Image 1: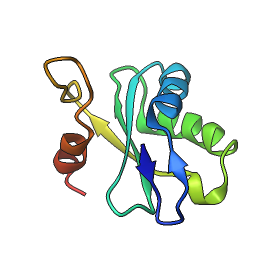
Image 2: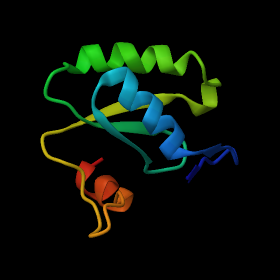
Image 3: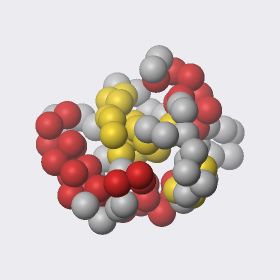
Amino acid sequence: MIVLTTGEKVYCPEWENELNAMTGSETALYSRDGERLTLAVVSRHMSREEIWEQVEKFNKTKRNSMQIRGISLWGKPFPRTAQGDLQRWRILEESGE
């Protein structure tokens, strides 16, 4: 879960499942400052523009304060624990934002 500076909560697995289906790619949400949501995407078949079109459709279902504002494209699988859990902190760290 990501808690935004407004106090609103983003339940990442729910959003990511929907975004995975929309983009046909593996996705992970993160926020460096609690204000700007960014979507990390592992995609080999969609361009940044095609992904952004899907994100814009998704954003129409969310309040302005909870919309995704950026995309980070990944050329490798997301870091995971030995149990397969997403290491969101490493995605944030490796994104270099």
